View 1 (cartoon, one colour):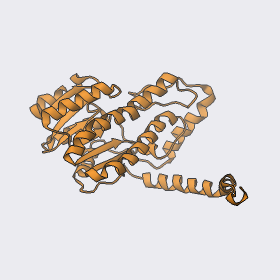
View 2 (cartoon, rainbow, N blue to C red):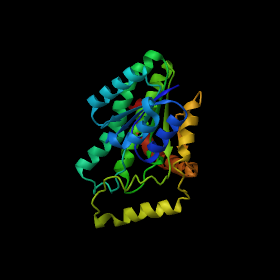
View 3 (cartoon, one colour):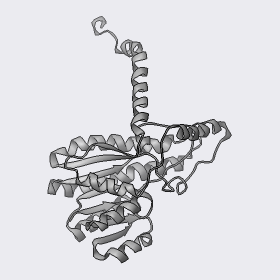
View 4 (cartoon, one colour):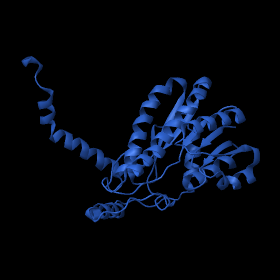
Length: 276
């Protein structure tokens, strides 16, 4: 029996994952901003659930929550950083408070929980850390720049972390969901639209319609995350959903082509050491 620590467990993908984790007989520390939303889990699964009210941006509260879980269950085997929101807005439209809140939840929240579980995982020399990123952690689209910046930060931190903790048999995986109807956008704060950027929003929606992405079944992701948990050597990154590979091939081919086109400036910047 494994013990999971799952943030954002009361809605969206997290709600499906919480149910699947408990259905298979594991222990679960489930967190939400309002612990009352987790009552159905505690009513159904009893002592195998520890429902925690938690704001992941509060580092002291995160540390206390992890300590409580370790005392209750003896350790945390799998951390799933799922708590987050998606701020829609062009870079100039987003307020300073909105931008900071986006980074606080999506990046710093995941950083604090990750740091909190690492000492215990290192002592036991085993563990899984699953970071819920996004296809937007690998590409960037107009009107989602601040949201995707938070995911790009999560990607960089997690890739570095994976190399740092591999010696302790701790595995880090970035889960990259594509499109799932979870109500994330509707439940998230939105920037006040500026008519100057109407074209950016139109480009976002037009791009989504023409991308070939088909909304996936949120319930199906539960079996995928359990399969990932049982994989002996999990990947650093895995897409949840289809057609993402085509988008990434186009993205990375374009990046390389652009760098090659401007390689003459790269060489100019390098200079000629022989002339010093």
